[in-house]
Image (tube, rainbow, N blue to C red; front, top):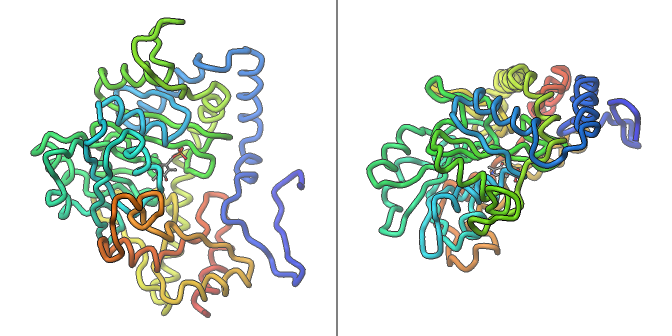
Length: 379
Ligand SMILES: *Cc1c(COP(=O)(O)O)cnc(C)c1O
């Protein structure tokens, strides 16, 4: 590989853009990152230590919650949130079928049953459909801040309170987004953040965090992440091995001061796409953001006609795209035992046929954005 971020051309001389450019991001903050990494290696403390503690304090302050617990992935944050609330076999948990598998996979890992509820026009869990899905077994709701924008959380929280359900905000895609002046990660009873490398605040490996104002839950997750051990070789409960390691914590501490600026860049790119594509004939829907919230564009995702043709057309011009997500969770083989059929969640199903994500990351030059707009308009 090359030593610095460069552009590439294929054999036909077509300039190949990147869908995401983590190398360019690294080069922009190389010194801070290298310092952080060597600080940890020299200290020689790699699991549970001062970097993780600082990161927990800083992320808690950033998101506006009292407690943060570093974990080894966003998926484990969901799993441990469910465990800490005692979700078990026979329980039901309401969530959206239009999300990454982790959201529902972790429900099943606890022995509980995911109860899907269809999505609204923003492709977020539709609060108007939640109440009809609640049964005597329902214990929790997991709304997802899809593509970086929270759903109508007040509406979801009101329903949860009425039925004494726990709200677990899947904030894996939304760190920095706001809803009614509050930051994502503080919008339910607990929230799960992912620092997967491709997320807006990405580690150089797996990492995640659980956020909450509830001290009991935070304490329980702190035990669960470390083999149920309040002290060495004493185990109060059966736990997991799920700590956020010191190298990742140090890297994330170095990146955190840049997050707000990076998110602003993503928003600028999204605005430019929105302006440029508003009247493009192939575009059926451009993401819209209600006035009471913001989106941090983990993905910039359109809905389009003739998606496969458009993907090929763009690829031919060196423009990579992605589909989030091509198959809703209720139709995944992994959930075949739920016995759910095509037609059950029509909005999610239609979205899975129409969504198309465009490159959207802070280092993406605006001239590339303009090229992408032109190629879509001329399709
Ligand atoms: C990324 C993601 C997760 C899982 O996070 P990991 O850190 O990759 O385990 C969960 N939910 C959603 C919606 C995600 O996008």
